[in-house]
Length: 119
Image (cartoon, rainbow, N blue to C red):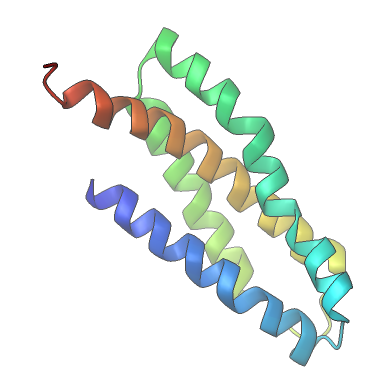
């Protein structure tokens, strides 16, 4: 539960701050910034169902840990962006964070739901 809280906090900081970075630091239009930002949710859209199915077969713990590790690396990579970074530099970091989030969220949700007693 705590891991999910930290993951969501990091996710929302990235989703909230990155458009400001893209528009005010890099000088992109709102449309271009929005297009770049789609790298994150599109990656989650592809990865999460696969991770959910995989977690049913191999368990949740390893996938969730791997997802959080990838999220950590991606967040650190996001911190390395600067004014000279290009749109591809931002997009691959957001995609990497999406990969980690997709790998983490489905197995984590499965583990949380599995720990609740049935009525």
